[in-house]
Image 1 (spheres, rainbow, N blue to C red):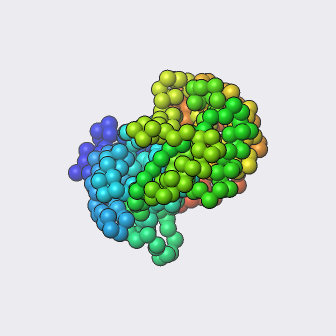
Image 2 (cartoon, one colour; image 1 turned 90 degrees about the vertical axis):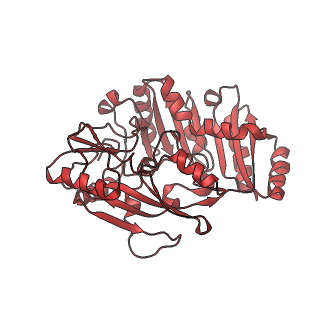
Image 3 (tube, rainbow, N blue to C red; image 1 turned 60 degrees about the vertical axis):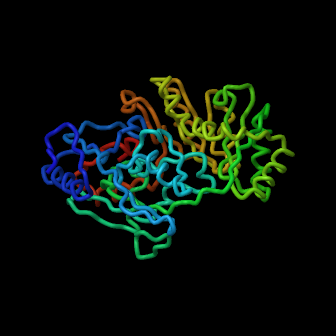
Length: 385
């Protein structure tokens, strides 16, 4: 039995995880829940808790059916380890999260992290097909299953995605996995202005091409005088040849094959690199339409990285106070704006989620249904829940 009086409790199975959260709840003990805690600067402040539970010891692959394109894993398995396993079968889980070298898959799903390839493959909501989670009643609840199509009633597991561990403790996650494309190539454009870059983005989206990623970096993020538009393409050799012809005609240059992986890893990990070098830095995420992306990016002087094919824009600020002011102003027009990353010692004085909308009251009711004592990861959902 785990020692519940140690600094960090590390259950080794879903059953032990359920026992731990149930033990805490019956004694009215507040709980901080996480995996490797690689994203403490993300979301709301980690409120002081009586007990810390880490899923990092729960790192087994429970069921893997390469032919069925499904896998079930415990929440504590590192994303990088899971990716290596899938790559051995030429399969992938293309979430491309920041902090991929250290993050657990449970933490990635709980925070709904994603990266460049969300344009084609979506987020965790599109890849998770089943889940097992531990409630504060000390019970294990299963939702979904191990088949790609599952229509057996309400999928409560979807509530856990993006909840920051405020509802229950994710124990096991089942994914549909994606076959790796036979060939991949990356193409880069350079543009002197934002208008030209967005016009090229529009032309690609209107064409027959269907790239996995279309990312746009402003000069401050690209560390060059021009805007950088990056396109990641996958398919058979004929499809890649078509990308090469069409994009080259638009002015793109192909990234050398040996540099592609590092190039995209650098974009996916822009956030941790920036935060490592700017201790008071903060990141604001703005979700907008494709048409609105240009208006969102134009006034930002600091580094900006946009998922230009989906309308998600990340703005980087050296001073967290400037980030909060920008978020408050931007939220008046684009309500899906949050200060996604900020220093722990500044979060209590910042409005991290300026305009949560009418859905917030529904979220609070759901929180109360799962956690009526308000014990679990208090404040982690951008200090609102």
